Image (cartoon, rainbow, N blue to C red):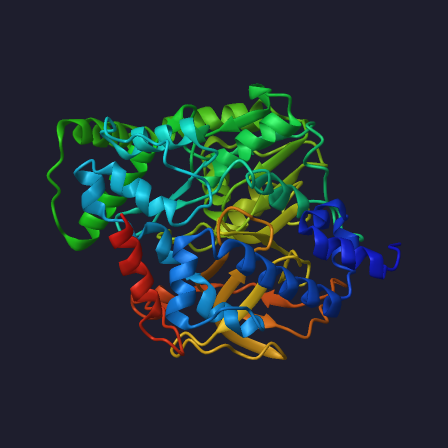
Length: 476
């Protein structure tokens, strides 16, 4: 039974949003959402006021759209940055090893001083990122896509613990729903990710979790492969995939040829790698408490590997499976869910937490037993018309492009226009009992709906986002 939130609690949450993390999931979703919205707006206003003088990118965007202060949630459609902005640097600068220009580009997105970064001796994007991390608190998160470039999200040591909090929070129990204390350090963390280290958000989560909750114990983490997935590998892999999609051939340097050869070897040994992983993560952990972390695609591939080996997952009954998304470019075969349920007989569906999240926000959404997604309520979830850029009403049921704002970060601007189309029920009322808006568990990539096109428009100042991208390019 949860206690009734007090006015003093709401005041403390507005004063410091990190206090949201002190609440249990039951307490969090029992907050009066009218009061939560007041806090969200106040934090949106405060972050804009505090960060605008410190971030050149935000200054420029505010000038382009003609906003000097935040007056309401609708301002988010003009002040949030397109998700493509985090890869708006010049690919040619990477290929020509002009990393001083990338440093200037990155400086426009972070409050941390990058003047101590000396990139003149860096020959690859991996070397440059190592230099950035050596002399600054920045810990950029990388992700690849279909553009041929990797995104560089300006996370720093100030915010990186959020990557643990947002992922452990949502596997906590809620009412009669199953859950675990993922920070207890007693659950072996199993993740079929192709490396133990790297700058993707999954290795980041493992690293911070290991440092903060597992006393540095490496044996409590099992991945598909050990080693590091470097930025150079992600960069080249993205270029190769794009070239293949366009039917083009790439001219590779000797160093790139070596990386490409290593990637090809890794891909050719897929069956051997999965066999080793299943032996370690399934056979070796029989009866033990496990937290599985991975995309639905990874969960299926693991189940399929178990099927081929005629093995069933027999972890401790209290184990938990956390999964969701991550199926870009992957086609699930017919009956794939049956394969998963068959090979995880003690945990699917009863011990599964399906989630929806993104690198850009700590407000991850958890899927309830009624197949609805509930964002952690400190973050703002907003919608805009994909065609016009106009804000959609924050009442009733609306479908549009999702815009998010995370009030937690203080060293970068966490307002982002996503590439996802979602349906939000703003008036709440989900049968699971969680208060506040919720979303249908049916997320679509706008680019896929539009035949590959994902042009983001600003309603009042159509050229604003392109001008910001041009500004960042010139800043470098």
